Amino acid sequence: MYNNTYSSYGRNKGGRTSYKSKPSSRGNRRGAYIDPSKFINIPKPRTEQPVYVAKNAFADFPFHDGLKKNIEKAGYVTPTAIQDKAITHVLSGKDVIGLANTGTGKTAAFVLPTIQRLLEMPRGTTALIVAPTRELAQQIDDEFKIFSRGAGFLSVLCVGGMNIVPQIRTLREKPEVVIGTPGRLKDLVERGILSLAKTQIVILDEADQMLDMGFIGDIEFLIDLLPQERQGLCFSATMSPAISNLIHKLLKDPETISVVSPVTSEHIAQDVIKTTKDQKLNKLGEMLEDPNFEKVLVFGETKWGVQKLADHLNDLGHKAEAIHGNKSQPQRQRALNAFKQDRVKVLVATDVAARGLDIPNVSHVINFDQPNTYSDYVHRIGRTGRAGNTGQAYTFIANY
Image (cartoon, rainbow, N blue to C red; front, side, top):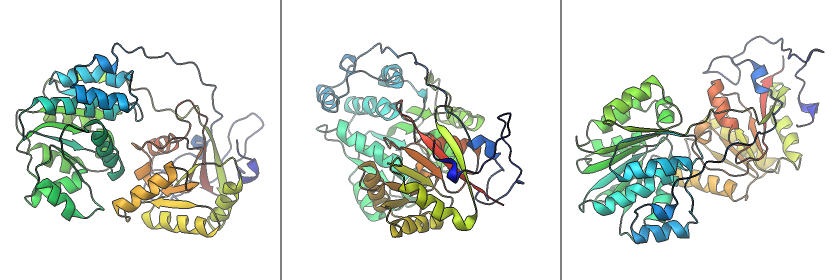
């Protein structure tokens, strides 16, 4: 745990947390007050989790030979639980609800059987994949291209923050797979560029996040344009009443597969950094001087604030990039790649990076600005301590 020079959060002799400050909206202007004691945790030892024993190997699935070769080249041998349980149902043409946590291989669970299904369907049949963020849509497109190599399929990435003209040009070439975010997809439909009349497979990925981000109207708009006869797949980490209503509109007699485990932060060491607003940047700079802070994801509240913080950190000599909604998608992707490839030490981001993204080996998560909800907090800090690694999270709180 980080040296408590930076944490003046007090504890009573009995070990109970004491915090006397009144609730504040600072750093949490849009959300409900979160008791700062929730930002402190002494991690529990990890218990040995039962290893999932797959019933199939990837070689056992009835994939086309070319697809099998691409799977082998990607190093896929044994499927994860969601892949093992979902692929057979998708291949059979069933509608599927897949409940699984981020990072469990959901993308391959729908991309691989979708490629196989398209190979079996008449030419001109299309698949639509909807994702909540540009980055996740990009990851799905990258994975589709890897596995569909040699199949002669064309995919198009339709997201905001990128020039719409190349997207329109590719759509006019009649791609087999359209991957995008709800707002841009709706825009393209309203322009008369994107038609869903021949869409036989529709996939919602991270459905709970899309609803949290306010995309339900756009998604319902797209669903209403789909053919009555179609295959629907919905992947999500949670199943709320709103998602249930959406699924009722999209899916028919779906097969439900649940391999979800509770999102927990009990194995991540957590503490607070109590400081004044004027001292926050200096405190953060001092923390980043510590060589143990190897790969650090810093969360801020606003797009403007995130960019300003990244610029300040670079001025202090810390290599940093920023991801936020005001950046174009190529700029965001370059920033994310630089962080993934360890060319920069710090990635400063809004909650766009809190879920869905595959960022390995994050040593620390720092909430420079507090999240809007405790659920957002859990998803933020879940970027560290992944794949059995240890993780550390800090949250700045106001010092009055």
